[in-house]
Structure formats: structure tokens, C-alpha cells
Length: 334
Ligand code: NAP
Image (cartoon, rainbow, N blue to C red):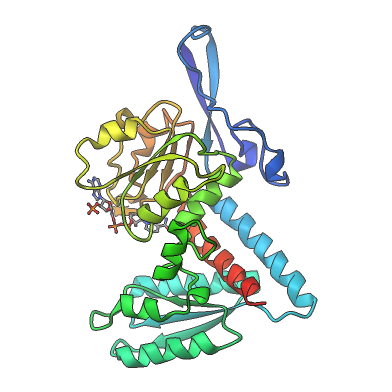
């Protein structure tokens, strides 16, 4: 079998069948068929194989434009704009950058942001009092508490104090419980962004074997729950792996869909991946040669039917889903 691989970006052919998703109704997209040729009759023919490079940057841009149009239409019809309160305690430089990016994205989508920059020595009582005040405000639809907090503050106590209806990060136990019971609620932004990528690239997981690496509360665990719940982009047979999983390579090789969220630079290599698998790399690792994911992109992309790059894959989806959750909270409070 002579297989030539070509890479397709979102602009060229965002769907695995070679059709762009933009401008198309999702329902009109065809059923996903893995594009890689299989061994068997006809295997000696020369093939051109399309590998889908999943463009999270463009997808996030599309979502933000859709939200902006939705907000603009409602505001011009007389509704107040959605509002997101953003609380940052202390001066952690990375958190300052994240918060600025979130506020900028809000402004672009027509969402009002209410910034609260609190000193590093803020007391637990003062922070809880602010959260209580924001819970009661009609113009605040979402409350985002930037983590990590300074060591003397309890993140879990603060997250528990946020009104679940305004919990746009989806971290409140009520929302986590709703997710596990398949009830509507706020879903953690990164796993929600992963599912949204699958949806927009028409890569249904129904009936497939999904393997999730990493069991954190903000990525791996909620992602496993999303993949296991009923639906075209759920209904997977899910395996959740972690540092005590005995044979990680065998688990990876069993996956039709492999989700990486372990924070280990380039740990998953081509020999650990099944030919034709869809690889979603959530990992963001800083190395001497820049940012990379948990997959060794070079070798893994040679076998994947579709893969997210790092950067430019899952990363940009997180803020887009934060905005989406804020608009959802605003709609829910109409
Ligand atoms: P985390 O809380 O540190 O959890 C890491 C998980 O990976 C844990 O469950 C851990 O297992 C498992 N793990 C670590 N080393 C392993 C190994 N060698 N083999 C198997 N499992 C291993 O991480 P996180 O917050 O979920 O983040 C994971 C990655 O995603 C990081 O690179 C982070 O930067 C990135 N991330 C990206 C976004 C985004 O917007 N794209 C958002 C959040 C996180 P144990 O539970 O057994 O320790």
C-alpha cells in the first residue's frame, strides 16, 4: 500500500469528507467515516490520505463571531448586554495575562466585564462577601474567579459560594453533579471546547472507543463524562487513564478517539497510536523549543485521521466556551 499523506486545514476541508463546515448546517454534514485506507482488498492501490488538522483558532473565532451576533441582536432589540465579573486576587503574572485575554474577548463579543483586582492579602471573608454581592447583582450573569488563589485562601470554599447559575467555569459541585446526571448546567470550558471541536468537525464518537489520559477535575474527568453521555458526540465507550494505569501504550492503541490531558511534553508517540485515530491534545507544555502538547506531533500526525495542533488546537476553545457559558447564563436569567 502506497499511502501519501496530505494535510487539510479548516479553510480547505474542515470535515473529514472534504467539506468545509463553515456556512453549512451541522445536520447536513455526512456521517464520519475514517479516511485512512484499511488493509485488505485494494490495499495495493496508491492512495492520497487526508489528515485533518483541527483548527481550534479558527473554530474559536467562529464561535465568538456567532456569540457577538447573538448578543448584538438581543441588545438592539432592547435587552441588556450580558455581564461577566472577573475576580483576580494577587499579582500572579500568568493569571494577569489570562484575565486580560478573557476581558478582551468579552469586549469583542459585546459582553460587559466587571473587573475586580484584589490585593494578595485579601481575606477569605472579604472575598466571600464580594462573591455574595455579585451573586445578588442583576447585571452580573457570570462570575469567574481566576485560579490559583494565594495560599491563605480556600479555592473550594470560594467556588462553592458562587451561585451555580452564574458559575461559568462549571466548577461548582452542583454543576459537576448535573453533568454526571445528564442534567442541563454549566460545563467546564476546556472539555466543553473539546466536544465543540468534535461537533464542528463532524467527528462523532457514538459507538467508538474513547481513551482519556488524565483524570483532573477540570479536564479529564468532565471530558470522560461528556463522552459517555448519550448523543452523537457522546455515546463512546470510555476508558479514563492516569499515572497508575499499568499499560498506557496498550490503552492508547485501543482508542478510536484519544484525548491527551496529562501535561507531559510529547510523551505520546506514533507507535502508541492506532492508525486512523482522532487525537485531541489538550496538553500545553512549555519547553526550551516553545509550546508543545502531550503528543509527539511529528510521529502521531503520521497515523492520525485528525489531530489538534499545540498551540492553536484546544487552547483557543477554552475562552470561546467561557463566553458561550456566559451567554448561556444570561439567556437562562432572561
Ligand atoms: P493535572 O491536574 O496536573 O492532571 C494531570 C493528570 O494526568 C492526572 O490525572 C495524572 O494522573 C495524569 N498523569 C500525569 N502524568 C502521567 C503519566 N505519566 N501517565 C499517565 N497519566 C499521567 O492537569 P490538568 O489541569 O488536567 O492539565 C493537563 C494538561 O492540559 C496540562 O498540560 C495543562 O496545561 C493542559 N490544559 C490545557 C487547557 C487548555 O485550555 N487547552 C486547560 C487546562 C489544562 P494522577 O491523577 O494519577 O496524578
